[in-house]
Amino acid sequence: MARPLENTSKDQDVAVSTRIRVARNLNEYKFPLYMSIEESDKLTDSILITMKETFNDSNYRFYRIRDLTQNERLMYIEQHLISPGLIQKMDKSSFLIRDDEKATIMINEEDHLRIQTLLPGLNLDEAWLSCSDIDDKLESKLNFAYHKELGYLTSCPTNVGTGLRASVMVHLPCLTMTGNANSLFEALRKIGLTVRGIYGEGSEAIGNLYQISNQITLGETEEEIINKLNKLISQVVTKERNTRKFLQNKKGIEVEDKVFRSYGILCNSRLISSKEAMKHLSNVKLAYDMGYITDTKLEGILKLMVDIMPANLQNIVNKEAEKEERDKVRAKLIRDYLSGMEV
Image (tube, rainbow, N blue to C red; front, top):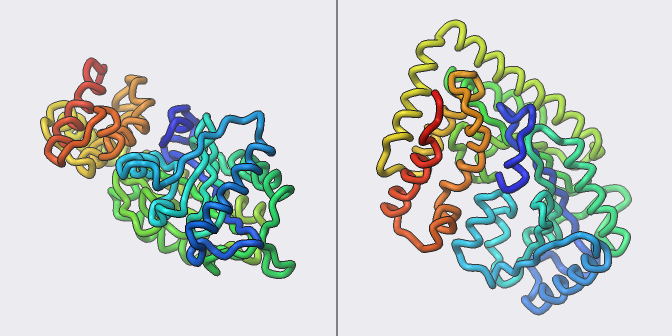
């Protein structure tokens, strides 16, 4: 939900965004957990030199976690540009973000390198090609830890093999509304996928947003993982769309009442938490996707969902704010966004 997600995609009614991430380690260094600060700085400097040599025609911005404020760290997490795990090792971790924000290279998270690409909609093939290109160019200059039978060696055994995590953020309000989401998630788990909250492992699903990703990294090629996830996410998209059609045909007035109640709350609230706001924004997004509200301004609602998060909200107003002040500013930001819309 960073800058790349401001672009619209034909699948964004359900498949909000696609993220590809590969984990890599260098043979010459201990895993980040066991490195000293001096060793981690040496590794970081080596990667920065390699990045400059390899991508001299691309503009990457570099940040050390220890040099950022806590709000700045959380802001990058809320924008899905870095992982929550990266800020847990503040003295060792850093990251590079390409100017288009479609690529992030995290240094010294759980592994020495986490190469991430982020695109709008269901774009697994394109995201994988972009990530693989960065990976191949770095591997040509860096000595990645690789075993001829096991594949890429990683800090956590669950990532050994391809080191690939492919995930799609999906918006499933109607499957959730009908109580069918949990049975779907259980079926996905049985065939090797995992379902997580909005910020990945250990996070909560808010605004009916879920991350679906592969769980197996060993024994399958990258292409097999991508093809399998592509097929299954397409089925999830179809299930959600069919459920929307069913509800529109059978319980149209109830759905219409639900989404317009949310619209009314957002247009009139003076205080609203991020969790409550996400619930109602999810319903307003659904109203747009189902044609109840046709104002094209709502094409930018995904960006609004990021802007109202605590760290990004404080960055917009350029000051630290306590919860009540944030709830007040959030309510006004949403009211201003929705004002003048045709419904």
